[in-house]
Length: 274
Image (cartoon, rainbow, N blue to C red; front, side):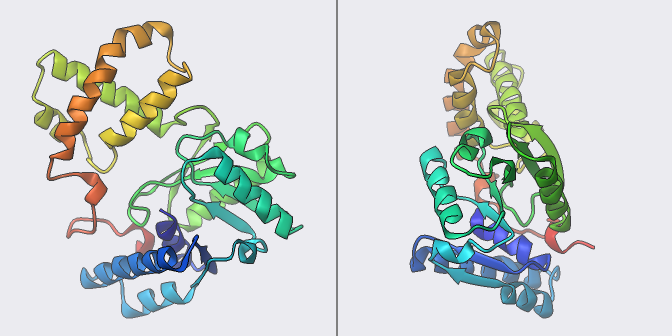
């Protein structure tokens, strides 16, 4: 997802330093940005000048220390707490600058990530959604030590990226994933009760891009594991949690799988909308 965040930031006029672990991964990220831009140009949503401007605002590197002088770091590493904490420690070791460290985590605690920082007030969550250049929502996750000024800065950045930011507390599942779990559980109950077929329930979801059954499954594990849901809800829905596997398998076979979504003729290109 990092390349998508880099793309929308560059399109908004920010100078972007895109860092990845090796040259092959970095090259794939840049190529993905180029494909997105080419598709936007093909559909008439972008001009040649728009594409050139975006790419000119992006520079790649494999050296973490090079990004230590940035004003805002948006981390999109794999969902491993120790890895994110190590990145934060290393960045602070390379710079005395009070940069904002924003994690794109969808499930880890911002408060826990911030424990690795000497400046926890400058640690915040910015949870983007795939595909980043199309999805408008950004969850700004406020940890226990996150400063008010940090929240305001990243909210303004999100708006400049032409996103719709919402502010949420640092709780398991944040806001969108918890809503997704609720929707997924109700869909499973409907399937059990014979209200409709799995295909028709899936069709009834207002937008397939808003809801991913795979994400609901992973988030459900986090929420139930941490006992966020009341015991009565857990007991009532335990059979549904198992049944989600069946529904997800059906979902994977759908031709509308949002994980493979790209531009189509009806898409709004949010990062270049007027």
